[in-house]
Image (tube, rainbow, N blue to C red; front, top):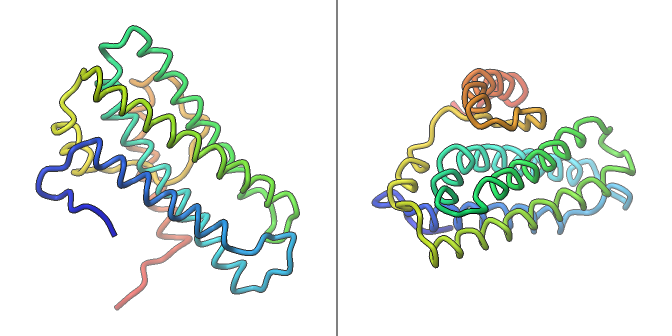
Length: 196
């Protein structure tokens, strides 16, 4: 489904690929029946699976972008610090909505409103990030090839939303490892691996 980035990933291409994957998941979710409509158990389960995929994908990708991409990309811009602060604020809002979804029962009527807001917030953030990467192409401040290779290597990053993550990047980075370990354990308990 996408570009092969294993040879020499560029951060711009990698983020574009991640954005496409998230948009595809959001589009799939939009095609599912709403909770307030007549929804069957299988459809409800699929909707939950899509929300889990969106949450895990968003959190892992967003954490990597905050950790390795946005600092270097915005470092040379005079408005870099407020941009990074705005990105963190938007990310925390999405994390809060993902956590909020866990508070509701499967058939709670408020779920549809939260899902609609989540869709709007994620799409708005993806659009904003695309604008920032476009600006970087006009006003380069970092080596997107090196950043892309670092992002492609990945690492142990959180897979679940943490809306209370501190705004100070150094402390957030320090907390990422223990949160990632906790998230992976929780993932194994709630979604055991399938296969033989």
